[in-house]
Image (cartoon, rainbow, N blue to C red):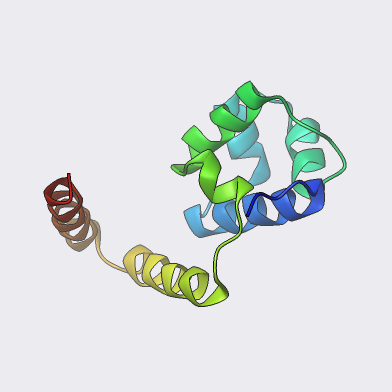
Length: 109
């Protein structure tokens, strides 16, 4: 189901940004936005163009679908747990896990 509420979209962006361990300023700079504009987007007090959404998603390594659609809470919790565990790994172990996931995803094609 699509999400049209700017506040809900902002909350999701906040969650993904925190999972990436980034500040608002870091996301804003990487996406070519002012700090204030990005902060307003996260608060849900500013609408954004499609191009802006695509830039933010690229910075956060997510798809627009992940921001604009609702998913089951169980799946979201599972993904959060996996991302937390992955972020706690050493760089070498994280790279190994990402390589394994990449191989698996390619096998689905």
